[in-house]
Image (cartoon, rainbow, N blue to C red; front, side, top):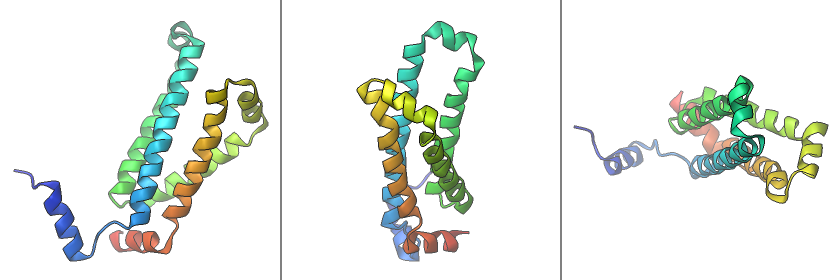
Length: 145
């Protein structure tokens, strides 16, 4: 029989192993970026058409990357410092790829929502990255690993 989540929170508070508020907010922001990425992928796939997606296996790479992103967020929530490091690297990669000339041209030529979503996503990822590097959050990860 599994214990209820409320008892887990109470045990965490008693042992002083409660997640810092920065981590909780960062995970919520990363969940929002996941929603942005899902919408962005769906819009791109609908724009390209189902026939193109079926004929090009590379179209599934974005979905695989999204699955890895979700897995890293779950590991981050569980206190894995390596997942935090990989997420920070992935965020830096997103920023660098968004600043590439191809991405800027794509955003300029895309419709309003599809063109602005990468920039909103970068802003949210930057906030989450800053939260993950706060002293309380870093100390919590040091205790956990």
